[in-house]
Amino acid sequence: MRKPEFIYVTYIETTPEKLWEALTDGDFTERYWFGVHLRSDWKVGSSFEMVRSNGTVSDAGKVVEYDAPRRLAYTFVNLSDEYKGELPALATFVIEPHGKLVKLTLTHEGFAEDSKFLAGISKGWPAILSGLKSLLETGKPLDVPYAAMKS
Amino acid sequence: MSKPEFVYTTYIETSAEQLWLALTDGDFTERYWFGHRVSSDWEAGSPYKFVHQGADSVEGNVLIADPYTRLVYTWNECKPAAKRERTSRVTFDLEPRGKVIKLTVTHDNLDEGGKTLRDISGGWPMVLASLKSLLETGHVLVIDPPSSTAKEAACA
Image (cartoon, rainbow over all chains, first blue to last red; front, side):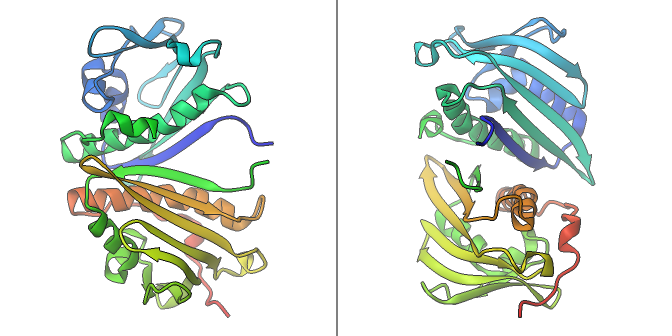
């Protein structure tokens, strides 16, 4: 039986420092993360929140690892009724120089079997990380409709 | 029970026509697919192959070629170590999403723990990252290819 987890690897023409900023600076995340502003003081153990453009918090968890510009890990769970009862799962970003590029590996794990939240994030991350790559390489965000994440 | 399969989705700012060309034109694949040139007449049932530095690297048959929407082919790696593995299958689904194209690559019918599964799990993210960059920026990523692609042997 396969482990309930989601893994995504991509290669981006950028520097580890710029990618780190893109993953941790709320003003930057707003530009490629469908308007979501990440809010945290990024101390290990501190709270971590995804804040929508209307000010409401969609997802919340805690910072688990903050090793700039190499490893970032946080837990979070979506707070909507759709995912009621789901436990926070752990998202770990590993940044590695790869020649003139940066290899980004996201591992999202710790889901229950048949987790609806796992199905949700499996659709969300490819859209978010595609937008991140485009923004860093072209300077402008990708125009992915939000509905694309649901289908 | 989940069979070994590899699924990768990416969103690219391009048109379905341009993306189809990028997947089926040898001059195009050579630029972002580590120098591997694809060739076929892209009719269902026809053979296709990738050639790298004069040697066949991957070969198979076209199962479905539905222009700008869906491309499916079988996949046999020509490396000796992969020769005894079953023929796997690659499906490209192209779906318009607003101003971008959602590309989903599904590589299935793989041997559990096989060399092909290991190779393609590392290879697809590189190839598709490079494809996305080429279509969006006009230039390819300078990417170190997986070391296992260095040695090729012709398919029998």
